Amino acid sequence: MPNDFNQQVIDEFRANKGRVGGYFEGARLILLTTTGARTGRPHTTPVGYLPDGADRVLVIASAGGAPSHPAWFHNLLANPQVTVESGAFTYEARAVVLDGEERDLAFARAVEADPGWAQYQEKTRRVIPVVALHEIAQDGPPNINASSMGEAVKVVHDAFRRELALIREEMAKGGATLGAQLRVNCLTFCAGLHNHHTGEDVGLFPFLADRHPEFAPTLARLGEEHQRIAALVEDLRLAVTADHPDPATARGEVERLTAELEAHLTYEEEQLLPVLGAA
Image 1 (cartoon, rainbow, N blue to C red):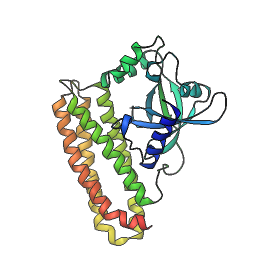
Image 2 (cartoon, rainbow, N blue to C red):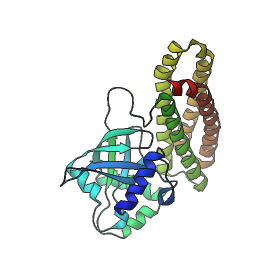
Image 3 (cartoon, one colour):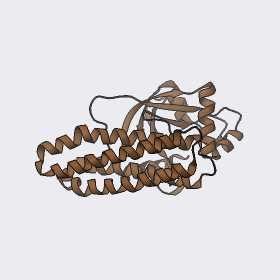
Image 4 (cartoon, rainbow, N blue to C red):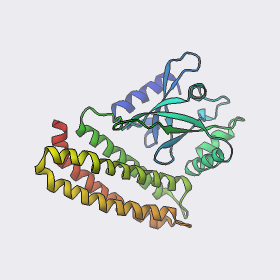
């Protein structure tokens, strides 16, 4: 993409915590910052990604089927440590180029989810690389793109809402089978939601209970809702990992989870954001 177009997307992405319109509207998008192989300067590029578990995402160096690899790919070959902005979070990651069967299976999943990847491969003689970005663990809480605890809660909630909306849309477009990448999307979402609720249970909620004893009934209700949502998450996990997963069953579990989760997120925001925002 031209630099001026990229910069418009970057600015919109950062201003709206990961939400963009136009060409990338409705796409899974991250900002990838690499170190220039020749210059040593940081370069930020919007790239599409594939969920691939709780601690890594996949990016594809398609360059629209161009004959040469994109500049960001050459950069991360020279300097594998990169910065990833997801909208809600910013974190350091280690880039690993997949090869052999692992690359082929990942690319096949991508093509199954979006045939456009196959069209890019057909346009070029090079084998389009697939790169795993492994999040580098850090001490302390995650780096959320927010200026207050209240905003942090809302930003993370909205990220879950967007991802769940994408999964529902993918489910609706699906046919008689449940695609491999769609199953991975569901499992990644489930893992992320589990980690978020665990963090609230052991961090945020005790923090609030200590400083605001009057919130005890609210926090008790939120804890109970976490347990109900965990059960729905497990039902969805079982539905998509069955030997022959049924799309209708999976869609039903996604709808059940959506209804419960949206009510939970709305209630939590109504109750906690006023005090967290003030803090």
